[in-house]
Structures are given as structure tokens and as C-alpha cells.
Image (tube, rainbow, N blue to C red; front, side, top):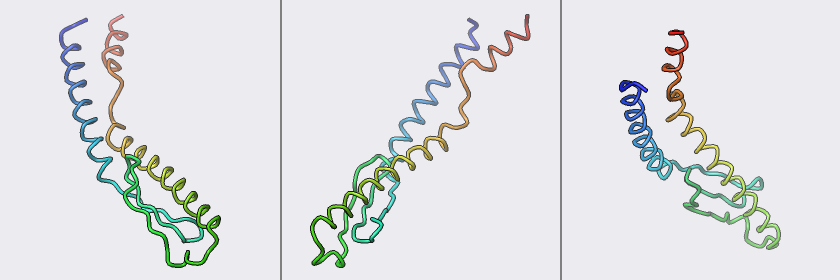
Length: 113
């Protein structure tokens, strides 16, 4: 292995470590709001999956508890899906342009043959 490749690998590792720290911070700052299909429940979830707030609509007053339970379950499930989507999108935005370590180096080696 040549020293230039090792230097690049170290720099890349340090960059990835910084990006991971920034990624973790960003996850906690991104909120997504979802509602149950019937509009009875609203859930605010962070991209890291933590639930920030749950709001039960006044329309839920007098409704059967089973109906409200289904609305809560639907909203929480949608919130988990939304958090996962937000994490994936943020990850693509932050890490999408990183190339595989050694990809240009191995191409250089192939051209030397």
C-alpha cells in the first residue's frame, strides 16, 4: 500500500466520523407531523424516531375507545414510517456522494497493468 492511499483513507475516515456526528444531530432536529386517516390523532415525530407530541382531536370526544385506539395506532405507525423516510432521505443527502474507498486507487492499479 502506498502512503498516499493511506492518507486518503485516514482523511476519508475522519470525514465520515464528522458526517456521522452531524447526521445524529440533524436527526434530532427534523420533525415530521402525521395524522390518522380519520383525523382524530396527530403525531409529531423526530427523524430519530422519538415522538415529540401527540394531539387528540376534540372530534374524538364521545367516540368509542376502540375507534380512538385504531386512530392512535394508525398515526403512530405512520409516524414510524415518516421517521424512517426522513432518516433515509437525510442519509442520502449527507452520505450519497461518498465513493467507495479505494475505487479510484484500484482503477489506477488496473491501468498500471
